[in-house]
Length: 194
Image (cartoon, rainbow, N blue to C red; front, side):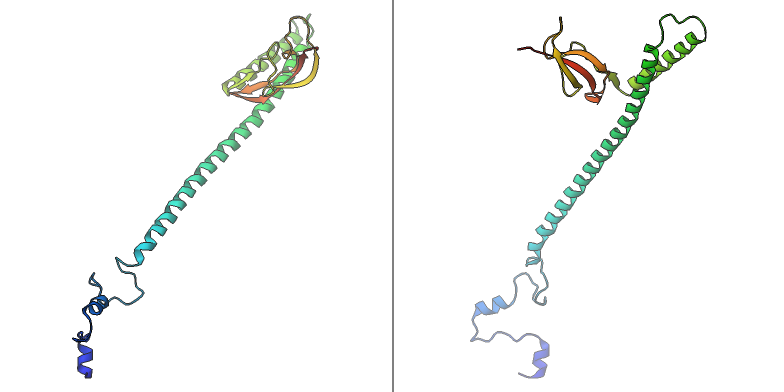
């Protein structure tokens, strides 16, 4: 064969060469001139496509999970900050109520009466502000002991009229916010003698 024939194109199959080998040499999809190792539409490149799609779906799911987790953590941080402030307000309310409880009953119409009225008004405004934020006192006396809302300081024999396992005395008022205790009530619990 001469140089001119080699430049013209591939050598035709010889009559001695089987027809199967000639058809195997040329791909059926018309990509006869594609270099070896380059993916063809019907070749090995399609097997890699599901791998990319799977990776993309996994990455998308991870992004969604990260967003949900960040949102939940942000909500928990906001709630914890609010609850710290509300507990501070509850402690101020405790101080105002103690001041009102210590006021003598025979307070006259003078300056002390105006002072007591101011403290009572301030305590009521604080109660109203707590109520606007969903804070309410926890019921205790005569209620069954609930460790989610009550903190038992002491157990005593059940007094007359109090069921065993119920709260017999409230030592410190507790407050709840929704279905959670903001501050558990400190109580004395009646126990069953037996």
